[in-house]
Length: 186
Image 1 (cartoon, one colour):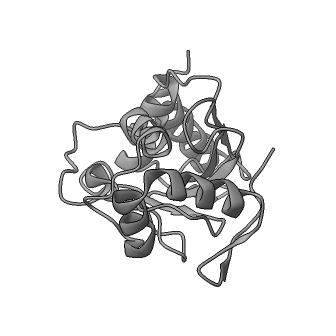
Image 2 (tube, one colour):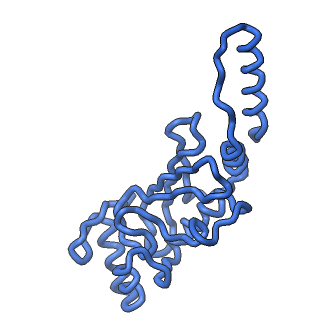
Image 3 (tube, rainbow, N blue to C red):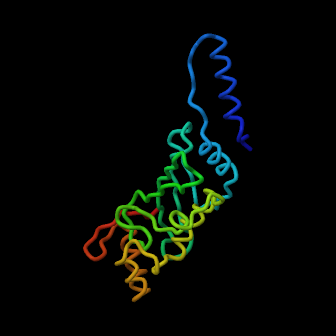
């Protein structure tokens, strides 16, 4: 298990050594957000359907998440998200965006995600695990009563079987109501 405070201690030691050697090289301070994200990441208990990736291992505040639902209407797809965490975390939620154009009531065509804990229900006691589980749940049970994509929500409310057909078609890169979607099938 990673030690949360090890980054801070290492940084202090390096600054002392730099000062003693007369280097004058000052490293950036570790922020409270970085410490909290490191803690959240060490406590993640993700199912095999969710994977995280850090393009820059030195930047814990910006990472990628891939969700591959193993049941429900979105089974067989791979959905990619960017996570951007600012220095006010955990007082502000992470910014989460889907990198693909998908047909989903709670994800608009620009990739914005409608998940209550990413907006008005965010509390500092929530962690990254809660956000990831919430995202996964959106693929198991899309929420038509709080949509970002109103057309998909109406489709789900009015004709569940037709909505399922549209999801399958869109996941394969097809078009729904004249809008072409990204192929997300694995």
